[in-house]
Length: 73
Image 1 (tube, one colour):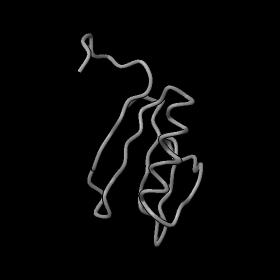
Image 2: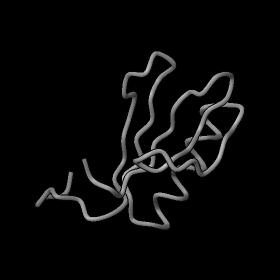
Image 3: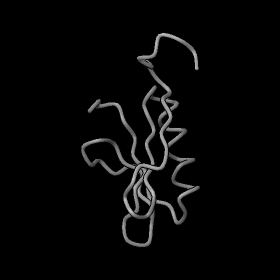
Image 4: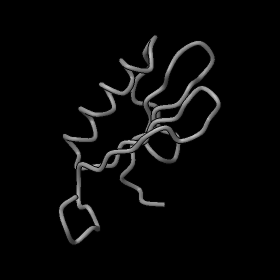
């Protein structure tokens, strides 16, 4: 698992934005707010943003850094 990942996960009644490894960066009341915070952080750091649904399944991901794909898509 790459070290340069930002995760958005549900923690109790709030959504948490954290780095891979557990370092919490921010919390938000809605998933939409947390994804926006995570996106701006990931863009600034050239990281990958991953967000989960309330049941813990990965709902989406975006890469803002060194994408390993050789072609655009």
